[in-house]
Length: 170
Image (cartoon, rainbow, N blue to C red; front, side, top):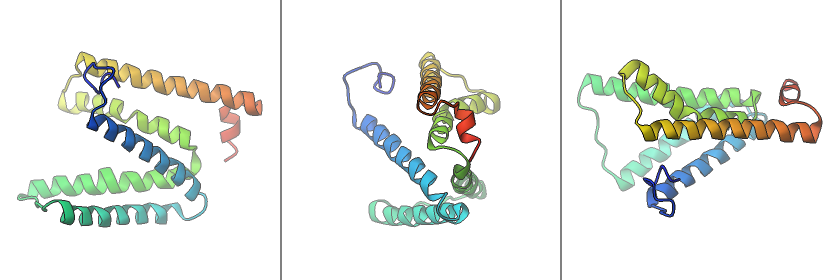
């Protein structure tokens, strides 16, 4: 929170609240996906999720904004590539593979998304992180490793088995 608020530990800005609401909503999505992918066809579920997201986004755009369409072929390629590969394909595949893992593992993987983005932007775009970026990456990694260790400890206390032993039976 301190990094998001620019060093002010007591500031709660609207953007911070939106980030927290977004993270909470996405965690609910992961848990619900974990449940429903075991109840229905995950591919169909993922396609329906993307279809309704598209529909509601179009409605929101028409009600609250004004559509601006890409003007060049390169713009269209960029928009369609991001929409189809990064969004639709990525989220449908997440829904399909969600049936093989736990919500916790999915959450851990997705919490590393900023780290992967920084690595790929360094490799392909030659971008560099600032000191605050490195500090944020360290906090993200520390949080993920702490949560994984805590999960392992709790799992062993409850079941007497390791996480690998419990999840390998899925």
